[in-house]
Image (cartoon, rainbow over all chains, first blue to last red; front, side):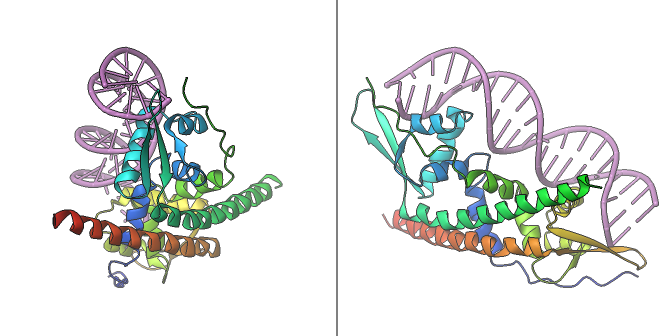
Length: 123
Length: 123
DNA sequence: CGGTATCCCGGTTGATACTG
DNA sequence: CAGTATCAACCGGGATACCG
């Protein structure tokens, strides 16, 4: 007979809220979109310009998603031709430190990875 | 003529390391796996038990990924039948605070969302 | 300019079956 | 128990065309 299955902390509390956020950060683009909005409000076309490889469809989808979740607001400008401006809500801004924290780990990760690569290469 | 396109901060530095981490948190399961390993080391079967809906194939894939990136270590136990134990490396542990930060935002998100739902419902 | 509609592709996942 | 192999289904994403 094998080892007994040890109980884990059941249904870890952080996991659900976590998936909540990660669901929002989903896809290849959402984090980038949020980052782009961290400064001034930006228009649809500007965002496309900032992220040349994103398609209009996906950008639109991400923005709507973030909008319905209350992280982003959309403001239609009365110009001709019409334009729309997107910005982070205060709730959306709360994501920024968390994203930064993640990015910090990312930097360490890259660093360690490169160090590891060098070690392997020098053998 | 429309509005001029405003320049953004070019190629935001946080974005690349960010994708690095998010690449690791990819898929529906990686964050959960990491969380499950935040306490004691756990065996393959235990992890499956903790996350009933993950398939062996995906769990295996995620663990390998995390292992090659140096976030997780695998230790084979000399038992019969054989078992394997997974745990976070110190590098892996560095992810935990960041994950917590994300989860915090997640909680607020859920909170606000429910508040919003109630408002809509009471109309 | 600011989108939406359609089509198609590739990657990830889950189910199932099988191995050491 | 701890995986791997195979297959089918699904979904996000890109390209393109089109509308207000």
